[in-house]
Length: 128
Image: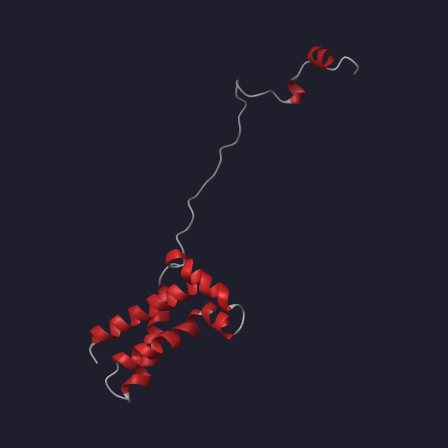
């Protein structure tokens, strides 16, 4: 087996597994698929990257492998390579950092109720 085919197999296994397990896909097809299969065997399979990579790697190993000795080893190697790639890649882009400065009294903002003089209070509430 050429290293080229091993690399392509690992990348293809990772890409298909990641698409099925973690992405919405075009027109939300993958999200709809995961929702449609529910919580049974297929739903649990689509939730687990490790499990799903074994099933995705199987047809690729059968196609890429040159003989029946190489294919089972290649099957496990493709799954392991895609799992290693998944672990090496960051899960998500971290959100942007956001912080607010402490509020300061501004001349255009209303004043706090404690700053209102007693004359203004008696005018606004004559029965107080």
